[in-house]
Image (cartoon, rainbow, N blue to C red):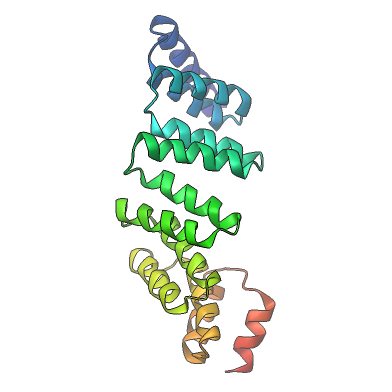
Length: 206
């Protein structure tokens, strides 16, 4: 109850700030983020559009609009807004990461890899971008690149279960069964729901 009252107070404060200064993009953006927290997507979308009208280079607002599109299953809308985000701020890692994620969903592997490489150049601890890039490499049949990228994630976060799962898959493809067993066991221990077919293949080579 306390949390929702605080959120309402915060929203009221942002609305007051907007009433006092309608041209302040940041106030519209802050209002939108609070509305997103309450899952009021349509109202948040309007506030984000207002934020961009006031501050056309507010890259974060484009990314949030992309997130709303993704929530609706609109991949093209998500892609469009994230492209606008990186157009307004070229070194915006989150925008590049989202572009890579959407391109991968659409099956555009080369475009996905290109965008994700930019994401990790601009943020070399962007775990989600590294993980998505490793998947894009795996889907492209580039096993060495996928393994190398997954291992970089483990340098940052050694207990990232999905990466242990993905490494098990890569090593199975390479017929490096000792490594596959090691990472599969680690993924299971960390609570990752490993595909039963992968588990069986690993167990067949113990």
